[in-house]
Length: 236
Ligand SMILES: C[S@@+](CC[C@H](N)C(=O)[O-])C[C@H]1O[C@@H](n2cnc3c(N)ncnc32)[C@H](O)[C@@H]1O
Image 1 (cartoon, rainbow, N blue to C red):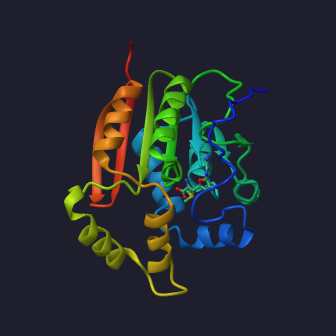
Image 2: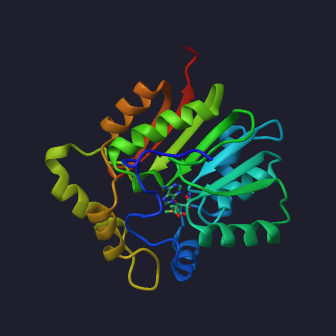
């Protein structure tokens, strides 16, 4: 068991939404339209994930991506700090009939990998929980988990708008994505995300990825507030 210094980040105190709350977990699974089985299956195919591969899914949530990677034959480590999320994901995996997912209650900054280095690390919609200093530490830990030429896929609320336009950009984003009460994430949910969680700018993420030792192969900002990165662990 690793011990961390007294100044180390406490991952059990999650910013924003409380994913230890079972009701929040169930609401999340309904509202998260960017993580449907079809979309996650398309991502598995796009990344070329197959039975040859081992995957780490950090902040795996309700397990939709982990299940699709597992259905493609990969061995999957689904890691989440929330036991309520893991319980939900385990039930979903059982219903889907998959058996090659190992579930771990741990965080980006505390997970201790007991197996060989992996082919892929995936983080979707979860890294924003860490402040920027700790995102950098997470990137250093992630690159150490990957094989040489291993792939890191990151997708999150990451801001590509010019900093001086923050006010109009955030207001526009919330206006575009917020749904009426009972139909998905509301304006209040997005307001809380910006106020209490730690989404940051693309240029900060890019500098951190590069300094950690990744080469960015693809970068797509779907909207000024939502970006994905496909990175490879550079050979040193
Ligand atoms: C918004 S959900 C995203 C779930 C999933 N990846 C998806 O795309 O639908 C964020 C997840 O990150 C988890 N989480 C929060 N803090 C974490 C940490 N420090 N380490 C790992 N997971 C964490 C939460 O419990 C939650 O399941």
